[in-house]
Length: 99
Image (tube, rainbow, N blue to C red; front, side):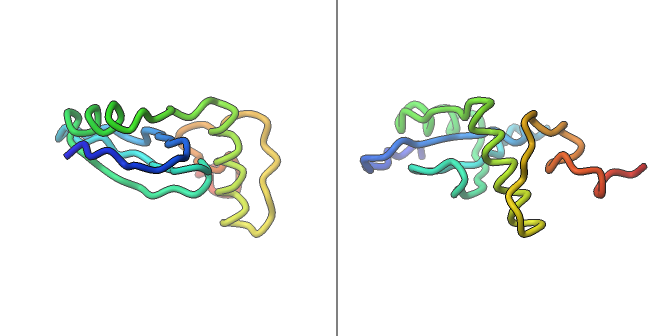
């Protein structure tokens, strides 16, 4: 595990969850943080993967770009949020809330 990907682009990680069973669930992107795959690895292998690939953890600004892009996929228009949505409401929209 923990293989190194030999590509000339920046690699990005966004941790989305850590389970009670010791798995780290995360989004992994190469080159463009909005084009990612969802992965899960045990904590030790996740740390090795990040170290071997010299990943960058997404900044708040990049997380905001990703959140607005997710909104686009859901509603067909690019989101215009300027603050990160809360954890209970992934897209930051009120239509999905339980109120």
